[in-house]
Image: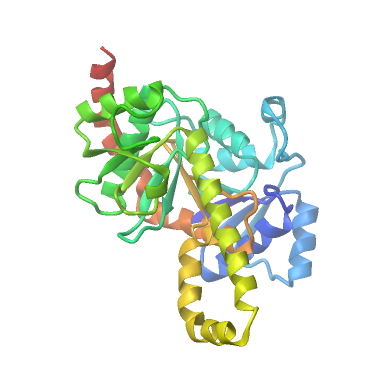
Amino acid sequence: MKIAVDAMGGDFGPKIPIAGAIQASREFNIEVILVGAENIIHKEFDRLNHDRANISIINTAEYIGMGEGLISFRRKKRSSLRVCAQLVKEKQADAFISTGNSAAIVYISKKILGALNGVEKPALALLVPSGKGPTLLLDVGANANCRPRHLEQFAVMGHLFMQGVMGLKEPRIALMSIGEEKSKGNELTKEVFKMLKASPLNFVGNIEGKDIYSGKADVIVSDGFTGNIALKVSEGVVENFLSQARSEIMKNLFSKIGFFLMKRNLKNLYKRMDYSQYGGALLLGLNGICVVGHGRSNTQAVKNAIGTAKEFVANKVQEKIETEMDGFSQYFERMKA
């Protein structure tokens, strides 16, 4: 198995993806292909005293920065990101991951790899924890502007993922809105509600943002704008809560003793909430596997993103989604007619 890694992506520069790739190659016993500026990669290898086992390098002179736009996506034909996607297309890598410019990842991935039959817009799908098992949230940022049929396709892809990969017979599909009643929401959610209600999916109705982690649904469907905000707010709440909790704990001796007694339990709780444990989101609906990591990813998050990509390849996620999507594409055609 070979996983390509965009060595130049992320908020903190190449050192984080490179260090994460080194850890992943050792821990998961897979071959990693680092794509980026060769001289920078070699410097990081020397700094980290890495023997380069299980890691190969493809040199690229260009990369796409976090703040760059569509012109750069098109103009830079040998960017590290584009080369990663090309490696998957040419079967020289089984998957690729990047923590770089998410708009560029979505645009280039779709341009190079193409979308599955029946999918107009691939969606970023992220497994989030709940008290009743993981919930798949999509879209979390790939598509800010969506039409009703796009959210319907997200629901189908989520259904197939949870059924084929997570083993759920009839995944519960919910639509994110501002209220549980079918009359709540904007024109988009009201129209999607009708479509999902009439579909063969196990649609359980609307769900509010407060219930993302409740376990009320196995798949939560949203446009990328709303889904991304919900995700970022959740991350902010967790970080702020932990910061304030840490300050309170250090105020007196009794709280310090209580913290010491609960340390192991708190660590387990933190792991469940920490974004770095999930690694990244799968760009679901592509003709290939692409895992998108958080721009603020640390070394642990990059390592886990590579591990996530490995699991998707090993579980034949792509083949399962592709096979089942063909049947649903006929359903979509009938709905259009």
